[in-house]
Image (cartoon, rainbow, N blue to C red; front, side, top):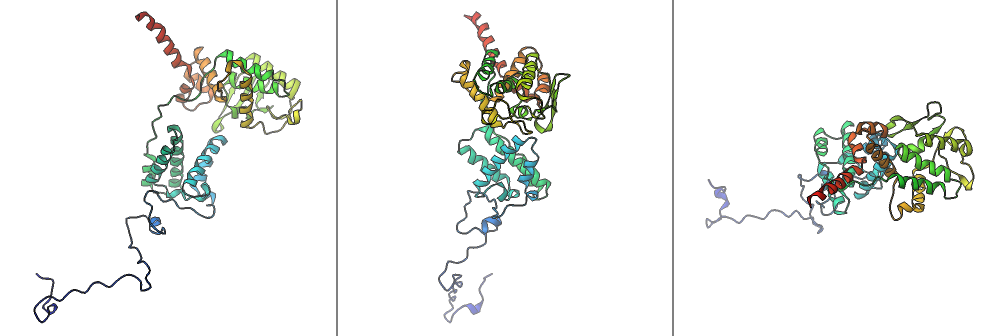
Amino acid sequence: MSGFHEDDRDSDGCLAPVAPPPSTAPADGRKPTPRHRPHLPAAHQHRPGAVDASRPVMRVTPAPIPRLENPAHVHLQTQNSSSGARSKLYLLNNMARLFGAEDHEHLVWHDLRAPVVHFILAHLREAGYKASTRNAYLAALKGIAKESWAMEVMSPDTFERIRAIRPASNPRKPKGRAHDIATLRGLIQAAASDGTPTARRNALIITFMASLGIRREEVTRIQVPRDIDFRSQEIHIHGKGNKERLVVPPEPVWRALLDYLETERGYDSGALFCPYWNNRSAPVIGENGLTLGVINYVLSKARRRCAELLGEAVTPHDLRRSFATFMHEQGMSIRELQVLLGHANSATTEAYVRDEKDAYRHKAAELAKGLF
């Protein structure tokens, strides 16, 4: 059946030409309005100019989002330690700037979608970030997605898609190493003999980390007399996530602590390790102890003076690993070490025992001598 009517023919019986559709161009010569593209997200459709399909959409606000309405801020508040919150804050601000925001408070985080997460991870990979760092960013994004879902600003389906993203494999050898007893003694001696008013304090700080296996932040939290039981000779440690545990210093370490208190620091209430202002012979006692940067400096200064560590790097966590490795070599189980170190997961404790694989390799080399 034809779609034309008899009235459409002219006097010669031919079909009349079809008139072209009216122009949609404005009369003043402007470009016509682009057609609506429903397959694109709404934020893409309202972008000026060409659509950049290579960059996902995350809305940026000119004013900070109220903190209790910002899933990123809520996620920061759930961190178990202040150092963990600071690390996450650094990651969130980096990601916010990737989308043109001033910081994490100016980005609409519940715009997150699985493709956005993949975009961020790919950007980090192309920028040369190692797998462990990319996994830290991924963990932060999953935490924000969880808070967005809990605040009912993200659908369960979107949250599950983000949560299903697998972390990158990290085959690299873990950082850090365990040092032998001679090296640790050299560090302590180097700190004690530097001729400065802080020499005794610095030596005791290194001794605590090496002989008790405590974190640098835990060192700064020890308070006198709150955390020191002089009758049972125990020290109360305040760890990550507000977890608390007791440690018993070896007798020589306990005597060094008492000597420092009696001859230099005193028993006034406040942090055990405090700053010495203007080269004073005694510390200025206060509730707030040393910063983590000072702990790093104390160890770095001793390392530079220690002949056993010439040209080598040593970190505060290396002292903790040294403690774990030495105790494991003396027969202490992973479970026992987990309690002493304050780890929530035994797998973390196993990673601290650095020298076990080295011992296996050396043992295999000795046994292989019989093959030749």
